[in-house]
Image 1 (cartoon, rainbow, N blue to C red):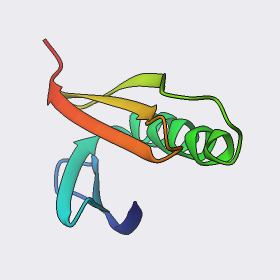
Image 2: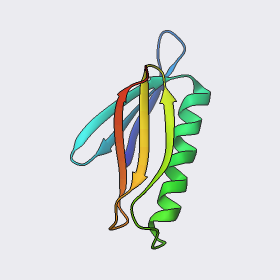
Image 3: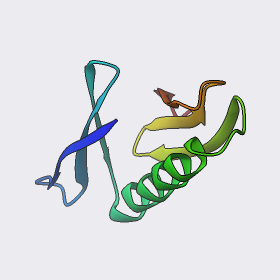
Length: 85
């Protein structure tokens, strides 16, 4: 997973573009939401080096999307997004 770009939108929100599993994911939210996402991803990266097995790290709401961050049994970071309803 790689953060490719982060920009402020015309509405004052932040748009983050992430590369993950060969695809791109754009998430738009407040600075606080994007910061929480960054912290959760950093925590997942730290735990990836420890033999934790498959686990959920965090659910983070970014704008109208819910981002579920976890680890696979092989220690790879996973990112699943869906509606935040």
